[in-house]
Length: 544
Image 1 (cartoon, rainbow, N blue to C red):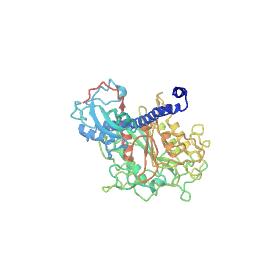
Image 2 (image 1 turned 60 degrees about the vertical axis):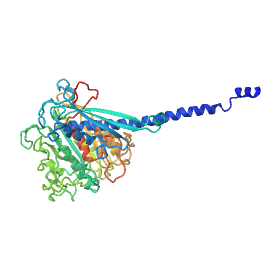
Image 3 (image 1 turned 90 degrees about the vertical axis):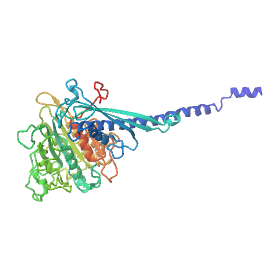
Image 4 (image 1 turned 180 degrees about the vertical axis):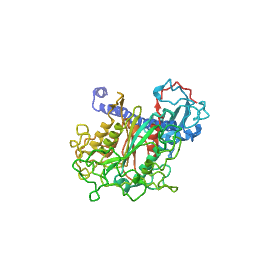
């Protein structure tokens, strides 16, 4: 017996089994907790994005006379909170348990960097004393707090069935709007006309529209929230003071002359590079008239005219008018009042005439060139690019010999001063990088264009040969999705929007958590109407 006990004490065979078993418990426990923590971090980011969107929407609504009480502003906040399945930003994996809203008034002079409207200021309504009885009574800050529960997977073993999450966002009320120069750049390739999206509008999910119509109705949503001229002025009169000026470009560009050769744009040895000049085919050609016909497109190196309309300020009759001025060229070009039963204006909007493949870089260069050439001090330049396509224009569609104002030294992938039929996605990303580069005004002050990129059903596979577009925000390298995300300014949560066309498979990743196309333009309008997020640590306010 003593010999057996002595052997057992000295014997080491099999002891690793006990160590492995004990270690496996620890390792599996750590792995399980890592999974739960990862899901919780993802949920926290989703919750914060929802809260930021809700606060921005609430700040935009505060001075609007149709939202004349706390309750009405609360309804706007709720719509963007993602709490219920009918809300914007709803996520199945995020159970939001509460949304609270409070208001405050702080001195705009004490905090000048927050761009706050002054309390008691008349902006689209009458301000009084900031009290809890009404959001439009003088408050200039809104605070939104959202709470959520994230169920755990493995932490239940340790008694944690769910994690309680909280996100806080504070935004300023809209009011002291920074003037904007906005260039809308819309895709009018054939795919925008041949596809339909019955779910592009949050308010009318049962109607079916082409992707082109959806894009134009989104633009209408944006114009309905901007300020064309100073409050109290009639924006259709001459001599007004412009505030938010909006221009319109499309791609492919139209023919630069109405003198056609066999129904096509002529190619001349040295056509003048003027694709930031309004095409002679615009703007009244987009009013349902069959005479003149739709403008024919021009190859991307054949001096196409991208500009449909220069900056406009008459798209609404006054700053306080809710509807668009349907007799304005801009409203006509984006089909204001069209596709609805009450339409009497017969504004057909731009056709998705196609004829050329998708190529972003030329339109981006033209838009930035126009913004720089027409820049004025104390104005923020904005480019909004919307596309559904893959940048794969053929060599024929890239034909022409017009020397571009940019070169391969500025936009990699080009063929000298000509756009290339290869590396088309790379040229788009590099053109956007060029456009976003800060530049110095004549007064010595630096400025920079902000680019909003809207991927409307773009593919997550494609592009041409020779690409060098890195993966971004979960989108594979050298794909249209990665291209559209890379075009946007930073952060992507503000400037990049991915919307899947209803009924189509595949979707880009990352960016703002939006679902409907008109919602995208509502969110962008919220940013542009100077409802600015301020630090959530802001404590110098009494919240009502």
